[in-house]
Structure formats: structure tokens, C-alpha cells
Amino acid sequence: QVQLVESGGGLVQAGGSLRLSCAASGSIFSINAIGWYRQAPGKQRELVATINSGGSTNYADSVKGRFTISRDNAKNTVYLQMNSLKPEDTAVYYCYADLSYYNGIYYRDGYDYWGQGTQVTVSS
Image 1 (cartoon, rainbow, N blue to C red):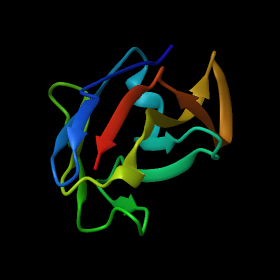
Image 2: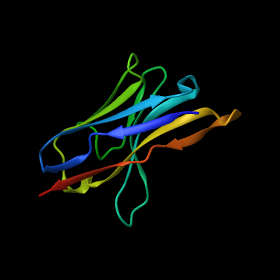
Image 3: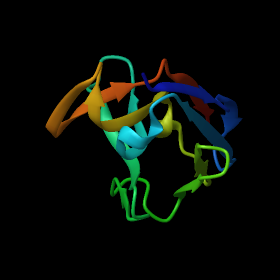
């Protein structure tokens, strides 16, 4: 069973920075990709950034050039460095993992697994 624990959210002014952390534990060998989604009140959850097992990254257009996703394999932790934050970045940020196995069942097309989320609020 994979566990994802997010941390690092908080309140910052526009133009400021935060770094989110997602610590993965358990069956981490089943993780095909890991990253971050976010959801603002009344809005659908949207992709922010992901990184796969080979190190390839993917970013939402709205965060390119401002956010950087990285990983520390020794710590089994993924980070999201968020710079030049804007009020529209305000959301609950969820750590996300694409799993090949969940509860012992193989998912050829992957299984979406989520952390509990951490609030990011950016004031103007």
C-alpha cells in the first residue's frame, strides 16, 4: 500500500515562493509517475506537474517557468518548488501517484492515487 504525505503549504504574498513536499512510502516500486494536482473551490482538479520514473516532467501551461518538480530518490520524496506565486495559484494541492498496482491488483492503464492535500493561499 502506497502512502503519500504532503507538506509545505501555507499563506504567501503574490510573488513569493513555497516548496511542497510529498513523501511516499509503502509499495513505491508500483509508482509509474508522481506529481501534483490542485483544486480551487468550485473548480475541477487540474494537473500542475508530474515526473515519471525516468525523470521526464510535465507541467501545466499556467505554471511553466514558475514551478519546478523534482525528486529525491534517497528520501522517496517529490518536491514542487513554486516561485512567482500568483493569487490564481490558490488551491488545495494534492500529491498524485499513477500506480501500476493497487491493493495487489495490476492496472495496465494505471490507478490514480491521491494524498490528503495541502492548502496554498496566495494573497495579492
